Length: 437
Ligand code: FCB
View 1 (tube, rainbow, N blue to C red):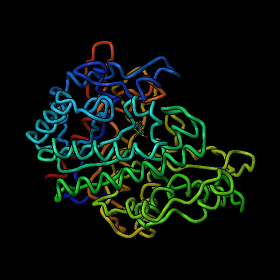
View 2: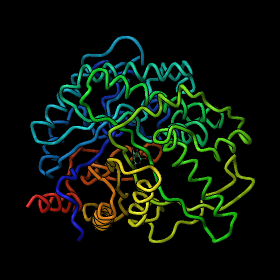
View 3: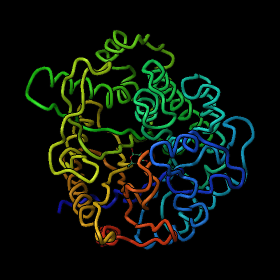
């Protein structure tokens, strides 16, 4: 196996709403996910993995696996219930104890400021479609760094702004569940502005901090060799990848997509001052990689004129292509198109197959080992990879899919909250240990 350099830190990722539970405790306010969840499945994050009460035992699990880095998110409604005004000391204390506990165990804490749980009062005031929400986010960032900057050195502003903007506001399957393209484009822009404001706020209060953003990125493949499908793949790439990468790393939205959105959605181009904010330098680019995308041209389908095409086999339980070479390809492309810069894999993983023996997740062992191998190859090709996080430490609340879909290294029995490491957890533990020798 192609060895990853020993200074690449290996860890796992979670997100507040997916694991914490305690949705009404210690002054936590309501979030858009409290309101939205349950629409599809009847399931919510109200209890989830009860991590809010079991965090100490969960730290024990992480230590037993030998994790070097742990990425979690700070629930905005827990630390600032109304999304503006007073901060909640009990909420902040929770993250302080967690971060201190991680450090005592030699695990580096990485905090994400926004993993999708907007306080409901901000949504009621217009949500991310309102420009003011970007300033509310900058206030959250300032308060979080001031309260926790001494114990957390690594920060991620947003998790997957594409999903927040477009899945949440144009496709409508994630909170807040809107289907309106002009709104989604405004939201995407405000998320990016809020990222830049938060980076500035962080630098002002902790100049030595490490800060980045996590994007969901994927190679996009056309369903056929036709020119129409190739053009569709380019549009999908513009929508998912370049719409975020270009303003963050090149100082401008991609021209082909601006023209398309102007024509089909009525977008007017954002101002240059905002682009300077969005392009505020970051220390690393976070990448969530699961699978490449396949598309086919379909002129009548939405502003992009395309539909999803059948993924190439093999596929996972969610029908996603299993394609470790896609990760190597993606990182090579980032180096080529956006320059060599520190890259953190902030999520990578696969759902369990349904089986009688839930702890025997051999598909996850193969998936992870193949992706780590691909990562080693990407490093050999010249990518500057610094960290890798498995999604996820624990089985958890998989958003609109509820609890049926399990992504954890560690199995959770939701009736008893009992945690049991799956075969993949033990494999990952041994993999991490072997690198240290
Ligand atoms: C990502 C999300 C994460 C989890 C995984 C499976 O898009 O960031 O919270 O749901 O997918």
